[in-house]
Amino acid sequence: MVRAWMPEVEQCRSNCRMRGSGNGAEKSCSAVDTALAHLLGLGILLCMAATPLHNQPIPFITLPNWVKAAAHCGFNIQPIFRDLGIQMDLIHLESATIEPALLLKVMDACIARSPKHHFPFVLGETFAFEYLPDIETFLTTSPTLRDAARVFDWVRELINPMINVQLLEEGDLAALVLINAGDGREFGPPYFRETIFASVLKFGRMLLGEPVPFYRLQMRHAPPSYAAAYDEFFRVPVLFNQPRYALEIKRELLDRPLDSAFPALHQQAEYRVEQRLAQLPRKAGLIADIEQAFSAQPRLLGQGIEQVAATLELHPRTLQRRLRELGEGFAELQARVRYRLASEALRDSTEDIESISERLGFSDRRSFTRAFVRWSGISPSIFRQNGSTR
Image (cartoon, rainbow, N blue to C red):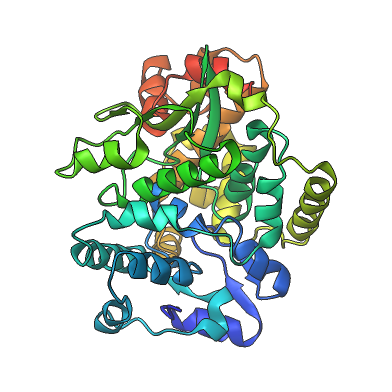
């Protein structure tokens, strides 16, 4: 597996600790955290797709999936890792990380070696839960699609708060929407987002059978040169240049009983996952301190780094330096917390949108709406209409 750890991470590993990526959290290297690191092995892919706001290393525990996808496409992935200076270490698989830019180079190289297949689609289609059988058991024994979709909540809560896949219900349709959790920028080409939806399609087939009754796929990017491959692979209408990334399905299917439902095993799998989640250490560190300050004093969201530094009793330059060392940007962190607080207020309260925008430091409702659309692809009012149905 990739051993792209920073020196201080290696030192932490010697003490069976590893500093969490991007949020200042510290995660133990116990079997519990090994399982959590593998929670929905697409974590690595979702981290990439959901707009990572920093360059911190991210978990890379899906090596066998990449090897398998490469073999399916007719090439050996080992030379790619060798040429990029990536060392293989399955023994320490649970603690392997990789920098996002390096992972994109791996993806580019795999695509170049796979002229007959679009590698991101194959990577998603061949994905399997090889490291956390409790999650696969939970999925395969779910009574409904609505219940199965709960895995995305676990991913967002436990792997990376910037991962945000929401189930939204809109009239006769429902959609799995990949929502940006930051300033609206996207990491590189659409390859990792393609992989996510390819994997969702795979598990949809597993739960619903063939043909999968998806309605359509929406992608924010322009049609790529290989757009025809989308039609061949997904076999549903694909719309490009859309305001969001979403895979839509008829809403009635969310609560249709699934043939594979197994209530006893499903409950046991859920219990095992929840037990592991309960053992996660509390988030600590500078990022957590800043997020807590924003949450406790939302007025800070409309102010600069000087005011936040004063609240934390730090010099502004010291705060900037420490954020830089963590690979974070103040504006991106501020945007991420704004989005989280806005989403919670819209979903869980009756506070009017004007008050929310003012409380979160926006100059007016129009500015708030523009920012929220950039983050989520939908307006605050539409989010409020749909959010309570999750």
